[in-house]
Amino acid sequence: MKLEEKLQNVATSSYVMDEKKLRENLEVLKMVQDKTGCHILLAQKAFSMFYFYPMIGKYLKGATASGIFEAKLAHEFMKDKENHIFSPAYKEKDFAEIVEICDHIIFNSFNQWEKYKDIALAKGKECGIRINPECSTQEGHDIYDPCAKGSRLGVTLDNFEPEKLEGLKGLHFHTLCEQNSDDLKTTLDAIEAKFGKYLYDLKWLNFGGGHHITREDYDIELLINCINHMKEKYDLEIYLEPGEAVALNAGYLVSEVLELIHNDIDIAILDTSAACHMPDVLEMPYRPNVINSGKPNEKAYTYRFGGPTCLAGDIIGEYSFDKPLKVGDKIIFCDMAIYSMVKNNTFNGMPLPDIAVLHEDDTIEVVKSFGYEDFKMRLS
Ligand SMILES: *Cc1c(COP(=O)(O)O)cnc(C)c1O
Image (cartoon, rainbow, N blue to C red):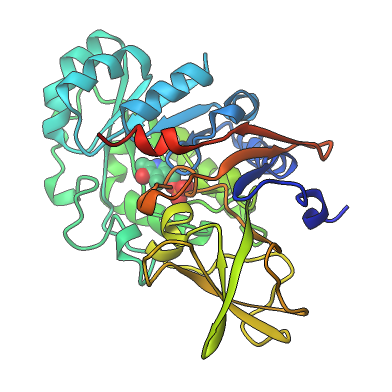
């Protein structure tokens, strides 16, 4: 059965997770773990659908968090797995709980490390420092480049304080975003040149996220070589914490055409909003793929897709189709598992999409739906 037939009866708008595709991604990641002995963690900031945490926990070693709430979610739903955390700065009130539930705690400065060192070590936690190798391997996306000038993320070599390394177990870097392993290799070369001499005395090195491991053209062999090289040369355990790669292409956002209008161009108004339901479309920005569509003017009928909000810029992109669209047609956006549910909002009082699962036997289960209360709850 074709995907659009499988999704024909889904209420709009809904995020639909593709369980089979998620499992395929997890199998690729597990293969990397099995071949290298590295630890791969889910970066929850990209994908926090805790319904799947038990399944993810069967393949990966655990999860990593950007703050206390994500750490609590992993603690609750990925029980007995590794729970890691990084934050640019911890609040004292949160830290008391973090030391209870996290295994690895990554600090963004030596100051933070000194501030929390005693309590973390007393609880037997493994602590690390995030470094900034000042090696930009991405262009044009400064908001996703922790090596950009003036970055607050990670300690540069100039600010590195080797005399404060005692008690630390590892270093952490995160400098990639949707990148292949050639950029990882470039980054590791910079890290070895700048921080290599400190690595011999440490227990682990965390490669961060941004590795697009489950993308078709990703060079897994080179990744494996990179991991093995660092492991063997410095006698380190290696951690990777991909977010995107875990649920890449493993979800859809199913919406419906509410209205068709014409103003120089044909415009379809959908029941899903770029600003509310797929904010990365505007923030990154990018044009998500739509099932059975082509680029503008590639097929006979071209439409601009816009959301139902009052924001003029709530535009998803332009798409062409073989047949004219009609009100009620379903529109299926691809790759909507990651950085979607975790970033959505109710601006304009927009309803939040349901969250559903397309199971491996092709049945569909709605695991959460939202309503007026969810909008009201966050306001007063
Ligand atoms: C964002 C982030 C990740 C995950 O990045 P992806 O691009 O989703 O793979 C991992 N670690 C840290 C510290 C991050 O900030």
